[in-house]
Image 1: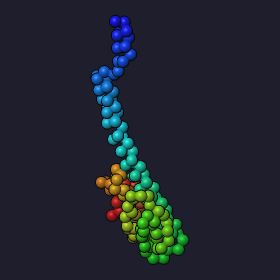
Image 2 (image 1 turned 120 degrees about the vertical axis):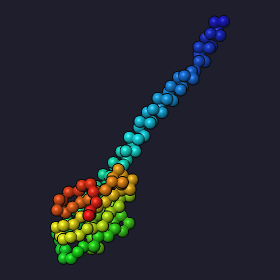
Image 3 (image 1 turned 60 degrees about the horizontal axis):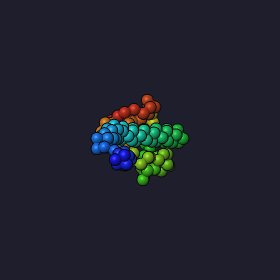
Image 4 (image 1 turned 90 degrees about the vertical axis):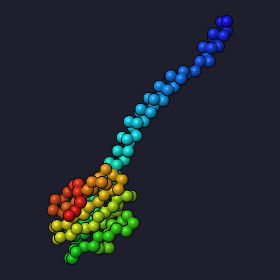
Length: 140
C-alpha cells in the first residue's frame, strides 16, 4: 500500500482548475497588451509623417533661399519628393504628401497624413511657412 501512495504522488500533474486559471491569466494579459501595442504602432506612423513633413518643409525653404524665381513645382515619385526637379526629401513608407499650397515666397503650406496613423481620420499634419512649425490640420 505504501508503494501505491508513493506512485500516485509522483504521477500527479496539474489539475483542471490550475490549467484554466493559467489560461485566464494569459488571456487577460494579452487583452491588455495587444491594444497598447497597436496604439504605439499608430503613434510611430504619425511620428514618421510629422518627421517627413519637417524634412520636406526644410527642403522647400533651402530651395527657395537659393534661387527661386517663380512658383515652385512639388512632385512625388515613388517616395522621393522633388521641387522643380531637384530632390529635397524622401517619404517614409505609407506617408501621403498633400500638395504645395502656394501664395507667395513667405506664405505657403504643405500637409501630410499616414492612413494607418492616429491622425488618419483627423486632419493630419500641416506646415505653415509663416509659423515655421508643424501642427495638426490641413492646409486651406
